[in-house]
Image (tube, rainbow, N blue to C red; front, side, top):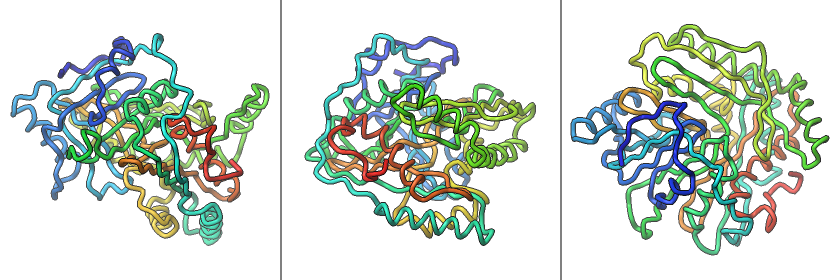
Length: 407
């Protein structure tokens, strides 16, 4: 099942036939350029005093020495990178180019899950109060951006059909980064372990040889059903001084973090627009060349993480504010998810539009960037829109809306 790393231009297999091999306890990462399917964790990253990227490189070397051909490391890194990561080298790993989705069967329009309860944490008014608190911190000049998140905790009548859910995410988000990372190796639930899954719109970085590509997103607006209104929303976002300021904070921070590692850093003059089914985003495409070819995709990703797109600025003050204002542990939300091979090539997305699934319980995550001028009700509504990726994949958009009635 192990295969050599494809060129980003290489054509991949038909999506339906490729996905037919997926099982609920497999490791999956599908992007516009690569498709990774891993099975049976042969080696799992353990805690240790060495830097995370060094332990990951050592794990790949151990895999090679143990006879695993073309080993691939796949998994997730938490928002707080000092916490344990979930990174494994699968015993079997299929690594292909982009999937051919032209013949992929449409996602089911019926619900694949039946909810008993859906609860926002914090409650809507608590989230708005946190945004108000952040605005007061801006006034006191403690920080100039913070990303505040909330969760949507869902109890279902029964565990969702995981292959069906992943197929739905894959089909609905063709330009995104679809992933499923089992959170332990136990088989206590008939091969259906707890899993971190989602379909992120944001590439943190892709490394192939010395070439590095990044595509940070910051600043967003809800899509509209009417095409004229939708275009107006996109144009308003591109012209928004508030959103362009929020985006510039992210780009400046990423560029500063890249410069010690890269040469020939190519930055456009300003952002462009990109979209998902639910949102317009301000987007910047960045290209660079590594000074040292020994720097792996994971090492560089960790040097950038967390960016102001998911944390805030300055990082330390924003991190402290998140700890003060969010009444839950982010876990792997707003962390990193992706893969890296023994040559250091790989791809890492920011883990957004995601959920943790354990049996009949789901915890969905969504956040919004708060800057001076932000309005609490609008930030609450933005998080509600971001829940839609997972809710739509579950088939819950029509049966029950997100916790924010103002969404």
